[in-house]
Length: 455
Image (cartoon, rainbow, N blue to C red; front, side):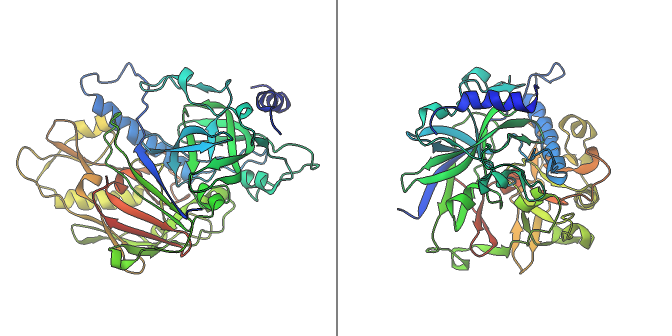
């Protein structure tokens, strides 16, 4: 890449142009899985390639969520993974509609930007890099480049990277790193269009260059740049339809609420647990995460004896549990995972382990259950305050294609390095959120949930 000054001049040349109701319901759709062709892929069993890819990408995202880097050269890093859920949003005057991956594990909202947007390594089976939808600032009368002295510029880089400027410069270029790719661009002030009322002066990233990131991201994290914070939401909720890992046009609702009325509660069958206060950490990305107070995990009613330090985050942000819509398969530090997997192995000892399928899929443990009825132990998460979340069976065990083998769809840190006591110990991914109503009550600082069929 050229020097930073030339890079900024290039971006500026592309951007130069123009210096209600309280509830909104959007459509939330499973994001098609983007898998690059591989000469080693099993063409007879494409689902194996999909599962292996999802396991690998979930681990890559977990590694980044656990190791976010705050860069003194003003390069912030946020996470993303494929296998997520997308939502359509409209920016600009007049509005330009684009698709975004909803991500509760990061805060910045950004979109592919300008006619010259380039995405390298984006030759996926369902993506044509030449046809990626782009936001065109020159077509919007409300598009403005954010200045260096604007407080919203500081949102991108965090308190650990104070920006030095003379007040006349533009906000420095950002670069966002994900588990599987990256993106770079400049910050804009734009209008976010909603039928119930526009949100003006919305800080959004205008990305010019990306790697393996063909779609924009709508950050729903806890940072000031996130969509919920900039919109002043009191809460938001969703119920994720089951993954099909194809292009089927299925969707569910993402509800955004801007006032305190109709706040729901236990009478609606919703259980609540308080969000854990985000740990004070030099890693500012930890401040974006929704930590929850997980107290224990049970398998088949038996408590898994997990050391306290893995369940409760320390002041450095290490340990604890976060909920993340951008991770596909739930991640557990190796020590936690081994304890959970071992309990399943003990209670399912009459079934033969399938080492071959474990090797092919990247998942474990896998069991060959044959063609007879099988009873798989219940997996339940117990939270502070007494709330309990019993996962639907399909959320944590899955048949491997048309075989008689089932595998647990949770991944561990065994293959992402030995230093596992960095960052969250458990990341609850979207695969384990299927067919569960989830409510992020931002006003009361709590997470609500109940089991239901999402549609």
